[in-house]
Image (cartoon, rainbow, N blue to C red; front, top):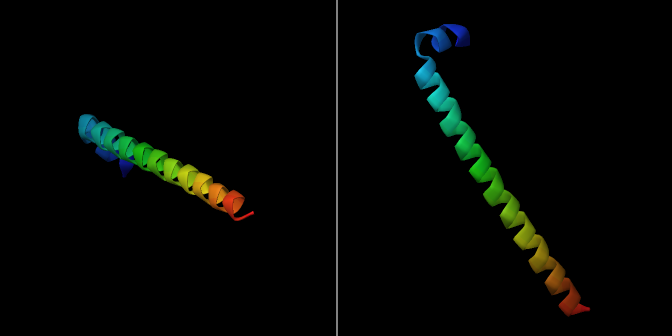
Length: 50
């Protein structure tokens, strides 16, 4: 099925993959940054509590 779509419209197919990849990598980067910030904040709070 994918091969048929790819043969019919390779440009469109490639565009969808590129957009999807870009979106997913940016989303993962944001999630990673949020996790790092959360971890730093938690560590700071724990150190202040001690």
